[in-house]
Image 1 (cartoon, one colour):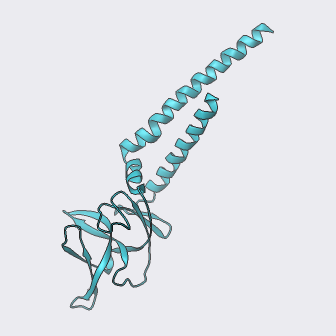
Image 2 (cartoon, rainbow, N blue to C red):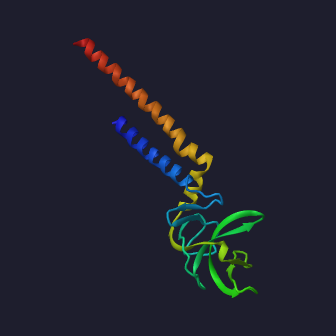
Length: 177
């Protein structure tokens, strides 16, 4: 019974570890998680509430199609000198002096952020509630240790202890014969 429980938990932990490794191998140099034609973006604010809230995971489809007003997009931006990947709704579109589209996005503090086509990574496809927080934690060193590595070591010790106990029982049964 203990062996079956330990084995089941071990399989779950191994599956999580493999998923984390696969996802971490799909993180681009800009920090974007790209799997196939999709981009995974943890939500960092509540600007699109109730559609998404902080901690959700947005899946956006990489697309070359022209975006329009009210489309929800994932985009790259600079925040305090660091690259950040965000998801927001386009509130207005204008043209600059060279005829390029400039997209206006309303930030959480009420200010407007302007981006161009080169910043757009994908168009919103769906939201997975709470998965952004879970994914961010699993991809961190602390998360990998607490969810995968330490439990795997503990389960291995339990499994080995159970295995040794069964060997002792078998050897006692053989000696009785």
